[in-house]
Length: 293
Image (cartoon, rainbow, N blue to C red):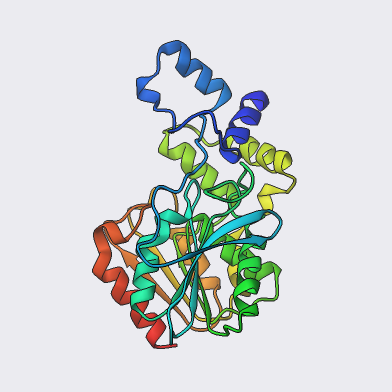
């Protein structure tokens, strides 16, 4: 069981350049399924599939890894929103939300975390070391003279923002976060439940080996605790049909956030891009939140 957990945790945190799409278990032979069960599923390295329609500049920021970003600036804006993607995502998936923020009067910086898009490496730590990349992007924008900096993140991106606020001295004007999980252990358990597999003892083994392989204690990745360090205005958004993050996790994170905060839920949304089915509701919630700051 430990050997199986070792391989699965490696595949979960290491993207592959050898495959172009995630393995479809339904199309595999019995022998191939046995191999996947033992060795895990190859996750293709996330690739940016489109570019912004707005004029943009590609920049590279030195952090714990070198990361690639797209900077979109306009004259006479209200501030800058830095956008961070989720697990297995990339900055091209943030273009639609960047367009929304630009229409609201903000500059945007779209970020590829390490292992994704144009950034360095093939690994992900599902928010742990990505937190330092959040800080590096914040510092980069701060050095441009911008003082009104907002952080937006979805799923893993939201987790990385919460950890950055816990670990570093950064003071964003606000954070806007979508569906952060409560802890690394809880999110791994959720993946097992989606596959209708028992969580004990494999979920714990997966978390242990995943952290060991990547140089950190994964059981300590705990956004519920990080939320206690959030004192800036915060907007938390959640899809009520989310099978990766529970309403209980969301309520704990929201309850632990200090200061001005707002919770917005989307009744029929899962762990997905909320603009797909709740475009107007998302836009109204975000613009209203920002206008009240």
